[in-house]
Amino acid sequence: MAFTSGCNHPRFTLPWRTLLPYLLALHLLQPGSAQLTVVAPSLRVTAIVGQDVVLRCHLSPCKDAWSSDIRWIQLRSSGIVHHYQNGEDLEQMQEYKGRTELLRDGLYDGNLDLRITAVSSSDSGSYSCAVQDGDGYADAVVDLEVSDPFSQILHPWKVALAVIVTLLVGSFVIIAFLYRKKAAQSRELKGKDAALAELPAILGVCAANLKILASKLMKQMEKLEIQNSVLEKWYENTEELAADLEEHLAEKDLSTADLKLLAAKLVEQREAVEEWDSQLRKQYEKLGSCAANLKTQLKKLENEIEEVEKHLKKIGIRAPNLRLHMAELVDQVEAVENRKSEWKRYLTNIGLRAAELKKNVAELKKRIGALETKELEKPSKEQD
Image (cartoon, rainbow, N blue to C red; front, side):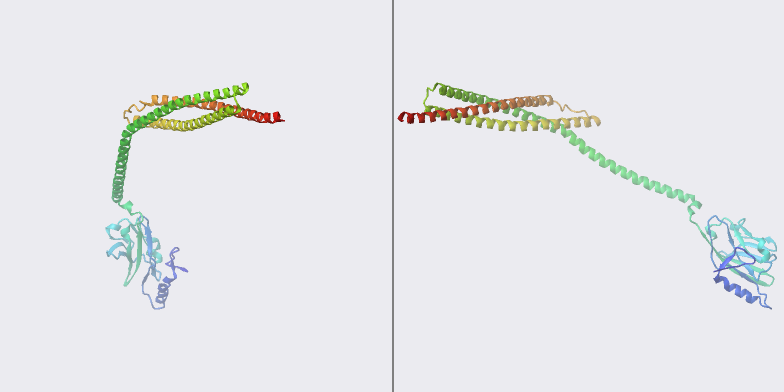
């Protein structure tokens, strides 16, 4: 709930708490009473720095105040903010010169409103509106509160100082961070460079080890070739023995018992040849696995050498000749691969020969068995 207050003032609205002064004024207006009263709003007037503000109060009962002595006084300093008397503005505080105006249009109605332009935070406080009219005197207090949300605008040097301090602190933090980061990167690079300095020697050792492994594989190849020669002779002997047995069977110049002994010897020799062939195949598989491992390690070594050379070239360090033994090593690996292919073809051929030999031996054994049966049947026919 609100009530319109003031002497014919259209915008001066007050809450119900201000009703009491009006009741008092009505009481004073009773017949025979002419006491002067100044009424001011009980609410604090608020403003923001730089705005214009109007401090309102009025006479009660409403009467012409044009010829009255009106003073607005700052209670904090007791200084005169504005002094009006008989249509003239008189002395006032230095701080308010040119900033105050008594709104004279409302004087005829008893309004004593004071406008203060461009208020500052120092204008905050209580103001007394005092009226002297003949022998009568009255006053009222108006509270003004000026907020300063942008006080830094009034003190640019403080803003500049704060910005400079912030920039200095931020720069110091950034410099310290970059310094520590650079130191950490420097330590990391030194560690990597040390590792790279040792890497050529390590790669050289790896290359030498691979070269030794390739040499061992070549020796194993030579050993397998010797064993292959022995196996080849065994196959030839077994095949010759099978041919002799077949010849004796055809000519029938040996007894069945001798043929059986010869067949048993042939089977025994064939089994020995198969066992030897099985061992050679296992050695071949082992050799193939070693050769594949050698090839993989060689490829890995080649990639590592390429990466090291790129990095050393990037950081401006002359790369040592890491490929010193690579060409010879590659040739050895290719030789191992070629020999391995030859061995594969040879073992395939040996397998075919072994199958054929096994088939021939089985056929010979079958023929010997038939011959033995025939000889056993012959005496029984003669007895009949």
